[in-house]
Length: 90
Image (tube, rainbow, N blue to C red; front, side, top):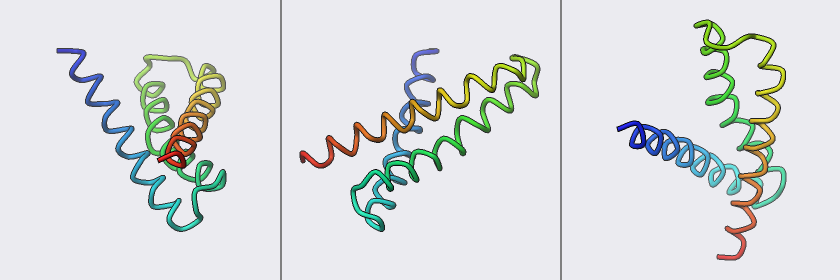
């Protein structure tokens, strides 16, 4: 059961990232600028809200956010960059 929830969560994030990235790449073209903008928008809507909520509930400490948030942003940018390079090959 837990695996289905994790897979659904990943599906939602991938769908959101892809739809925003495709829309922004239509406006700015398939460039590093569109990668940066789309991944930052998704990061702000998903990860920042998630980690602030987790800290507000007392499930993690606030000082860990200084480590977790930049790493998750970097992960999002690298994943979007890889997707944009694969999209160019299609």
